[in-house]
Image 1 (cartoon, rainbow, N blue to C red):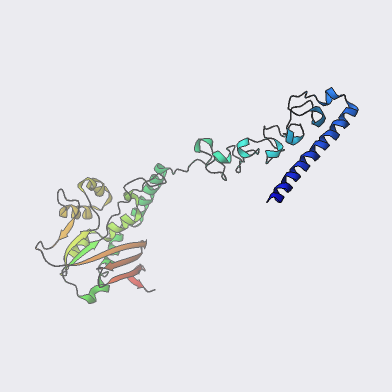
Image 2 (cartoon, rainbow, N blue to C red; image 1 turned 90 degrees about the vertical axis):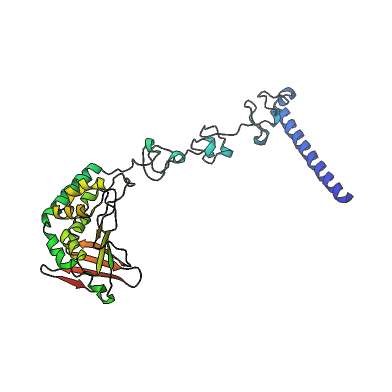
Length: 321
C-alpha cells in the first residue's frame, strides 16, 4: 500500500516538476525577446501572464492558452459548443437556426403542421376546409325535386314488389305478426364534423322509402290475417307533421295522421287492441338504385334473410348471388 502511495506522489511531483521546467523554458525564451517586466505582465487582465498568453491583448481562457474562444457566426455560442459554427442560431438549439421544414415562415418548434405549409393564425396549419352548407343544401334540394319528377309514379311499381317481400318467411307459418319497419331516416341531430348537417327532406332514400311504404302497401299489410300490428322504427312527433305534409304524398300523409295519437311520438297501425302474444318481424329496405332493392327480414331468432330484387320494366325478379 505504501509503495503504491509513493508511486502516485512521485508521479504527481514529477508531472508538476516537468510543468515547472517547461514554464521556465518558456519564460526564458520570452526574456530573450522582451524584458522581465513585460514577460510577467498581464495587459488584458485575464489572469494569464504575457509569456504564456497567446493572445496578450485579448482577454481569454487558460484552456485556450489565453485566447478567447472563437465564434465564427457571431451568434453568441462559441464554436466549441456550437453544433452549427458557421450558421448563426440560438443557444436553445445548440447554436443552430430553428428549422422550418415546410418553408411557411413558422418555425417547426411553433408549427403544429411542420411538414405542411400553413398560416400563422392557424398555428402553422392550412386554413381548415369548411363545406358550403347552403350551396350543398340547394344542390340536394334540386336533386330531390328531379328525383320526384323522374319517379313520381314509382309507388305503383313498388306495390308489385311489396306484396311478395314476406315470401322468404312464409314457410314458418307465423301468426300474430308485429311488423316493424324502417321508415324515414331523420339523419344526425347535430352538425357533423365537417360543418354541415344532412337534411332528411333531401335524402333520396327517404323519398323512395315513403314511396315503397305508401298508404296502399301499409293498408295491404294491415289487412293480412297473420299481421296484427305495424310499427315504425323511428318517432314522428307532432312537430314534424307540417314538414311531412310537404314531403309525403297526400294519401300517405293522411294515412299516418289517421293512426297518430296526440302526445305520442310513435305511430302504431293496430288491427286488434286486445293483448296477445305476437311474433316481432323487422323489415329493412335498402335502395341500391330506384329499381334495385335489397330487403332484409329477421325475427332475431329463427330467421335472418336478405334478398335483392331487380325490376326489368315489367316485373321484379330475385337476384341470386
